[in-house]
Image (cartoon, rainbow, N blue to C red):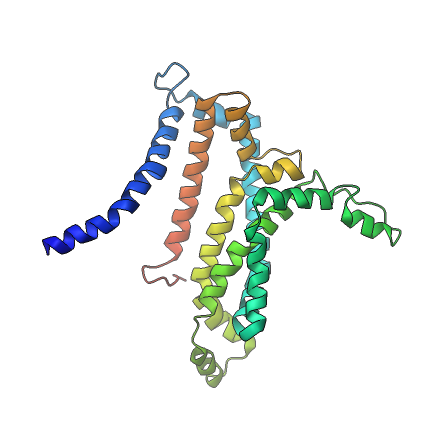
Length: 274
């Protein structure tokens, strides 16, 4: 038993070391700078200032709203796509999966910069619309452009977990539902949706978390600042590490709270509490 225990400890030690260096230590540093002032004295003034100043609070609320909208849109697009993808087989499924994965092989910066060129006033979309005599549309610098950038960049993270769960649904359950008199809508509502909710919850988490903390997408596609942009400016331009750490700490607490809510919806067996 002791040898087995030491063997398990040896196998887990790289993960524990990795977590300590790259997760626990950075979190400790962020927490430390959040609760001290520039002189190293304990202070909560930064947190008070965050909720008093509109130039801090508004970007946080704006990031929350944009990330919620982007997550909902990604879910509405991904759910039917993942369902039909799970029903495909052979070459068709592999091709569609490759189309989902290929954009992820390109850096987010390159993808976002490319869309900035496409959406600009003289970009490809407006040039195409001009062929039909349609006046150029103002797409860059709008909230819609930022939400579109979030959806485009994080859509695969919504599709893949939903597809993975749906592909594991036993077809015999659907056949049993049909034998019991369920039509297509009732099969979807009573069988498919409840069984696929673990994938939906995972997808929501994987899209919402990077969306609310993003900064490059908003920098390239809009002039509106999100909380990620404010943190970036505090750190890089103003060198106000204490305020930047405090903003990061508030955002981190909010993300952890959101993840706890998502985990509460799932039971220990990976099912969903309805």
